Amino acid sequence: MIAAIKPAGSNTRGLLAYLYGPGRHDEHLDPHIVTGFAMLGMPDPGRNPDATLTQLAHHLDEPVHLRNSEFGKKITDHVWHCPVRAAPEDRHLSDTEWADIAQRIVEAAGIAPPGDDLSCRWIAVRHADDHIHILATTVREDGRRPKLHGSGIRVGDACRQIETDYGLRQLKKGDHTAGKRPTQAEMHKAQRLGWDQTSRDWLQDRIRAAIPHASNTEELLAYLEADGIAIKPRRGPSGDLLGYAAGRPGDLNKDGEQIFHPGGKIAPDLTLPKLKARLETTAPEEHPTARRQRPTTPWHQATDALDTLNSDLADDTHAQAHITALGELIEATAQKAPGHSRAELRTAARTFARAQRSQIRAENQVAYTLRRAARDIAHTTTGPDGSAFAALLAALVWATIVAARWHEAQNHAHQAEAARQTLHHLHTAADHALAPVIDNLAARQPSDQTSRILAHDVRAAVPDHADRILTDPAWPILATVLADAEAGGHTPHQLLKEAAAQRELTTARQPARVLIMRIQHTSRDPAPNLRAEAARLRSTLVSTQSTHQPQAPRPTHAFAPLPDQRRQRR
Image (cartoon, rainbow, N blue to C red; front, side, top):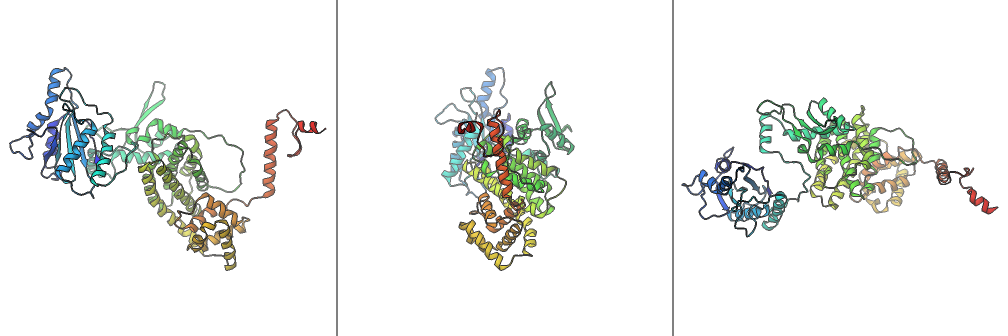
């Protein structure tokens, strides 16, 4: 059940004319009052042929007229309007049930608190099976205004309880991070002009698509202007950017002037401060680590960056930052994807936008690597080869699963649902991308003896999932990948253990297919050189010792005694 509180109005008679009228498409049938503030003596033009809309409006407006006559400043925002609609699959409610629902909603909103005899005047009009309209005038009988701050939250909570009590479809509780729904005027305008989207939805998609291309907000606005979007920046006396508004080409007002929408009205996370926090982060300090030299592309780098996402979700602020950056990576991948996958990935990016927003403040700096990977893909001029693209999509599937689980653990119902919907589109794109890779590997399967040896490695490395892997139709293809890796100097047993540790296999639909892309990506690294690794460790130890003993002469061997130790031995 949805209760949508409309902006305050000033014309009670005008709203009643709509409620009792035929509707825009003759959809209003049998309009009548189901309940109100005082049914005794209430004129109902839908039931009493002698009652008029003007009489009903005057009846509701009486406290407003009384207050306006006593005070110099007249009240002009006194009309409170709230349509309440059941879900299409819900049963038809009776007038008595709708009357009870209306009473509970005006009580929750603060229009008519329980037991308050001096509350506002209100009515609930029904002109269809599936919804009612509540109209109230927001001046109490004692001349005071009602306390309506936070009424939307309270009404939403009341609707969730009504759904339970009446056995209606259960909607998820909102967290006030979703974008504003398009108004009827916006939807009618889009329909009239032949647009598939309203202006705000269209602008939201364009701004999100531009984010991976920019490293700061000035670049972002310049990119949007170059894309033909009207931009109105708001600057301070120093020239610093303080805010912005964007307009869709062709979206004009009645005077032929461009209509602009502030960033925060387009979407809650597209305000200038939030965009600055996402875009203008600096690279975190890097610590010396072992680096393997290999040919790489932005597609491979993005897959590597996703490997760290699961380990970075322990801190909520870090998790939110990575999930926001994950949405940017999906968007960038969609823009540069081959044509056969682009539509699914674009839908995935739009769907995941809801999963990017929550009440948790993101520590954006920690997601720099993932965000940089998205920018590198957005700026690349070459498309991915088949295996690199399939590996990235497989990694995006797993990252989205991790994001959905985190949102579920945080009770972010809408975000978790958006992530699950995104998975459907990512799975479709990943299966399509993997098909030619599978076909190529299937043409050169290893011998039966090699497959038996590799099957033994599977049972030793991942015993809990060995049966599922070895009975997966893709097992012969995985055996080919393992044989290729072994020919390159890798140990299949170790590769399997690492892959299983990176991506749990319990929820995998086809574990062998998951391991194919993971191992094919990992085995691009040169096989580990034990001598080089020992030399690196020795060099690191020497560096650490010299840092702690800056005045002492450097020892000639990593394990040589320190100066103080040598003196003690003498």
